[in-house]
Image (tube, rainbow, N blue to C red):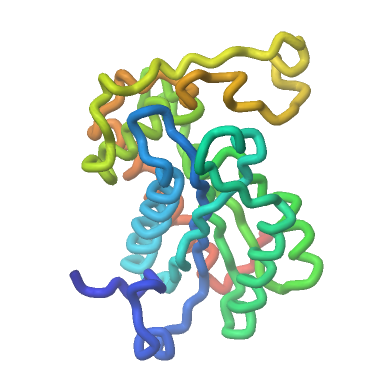
Length: 252
């Protein structure tokens, strides 16, 4: 396979020095259990694949973007009782994000898109803090929210459910165990009304919520569903990259 010029870990200095990149993409996932049938690195595989395909489409449209190596650790403070869950605190994420921005800004990259693959990551307050000391426009995108999943899946699920399982069946099928091995992904609800209705919020203690670490039934997952969803979201993200790469003002 030839090196892709829009994937930094594959490309070379000879290509980089000849290309004026307008947008950088930073996939950011997590390392955590995903029911019994998906790998610990599911969030990373998904975020990187979405970023790379979107960059490919944008490149073909003339937008010069570069996908940075992904960050494989996310905020998992509610799952530390599950073996080999790797937690990265928000304060650490802030330091990493600031270092990445400080590394790309002197070389003319004025747009950074965080392609988030983990629901426990919340980059909005981090972006607000970095924004005060940088001229880089930072955008965050949760890939599973780019398109309404209910139009593609019977029961999308929250974690290792139909969306993620279908995506992995499309992207990395050799890493997905038979669906007969998967747990049902049943989740307990909060007893407290405000938390259950969603207008109040607190982090979930994962092992108190689900027995198999999944939230959402993966039994109806298929590679075809994953492919359709992947195509839809990468097409929309590519358009965002194209627009960010232009010299036009952000505001109309």
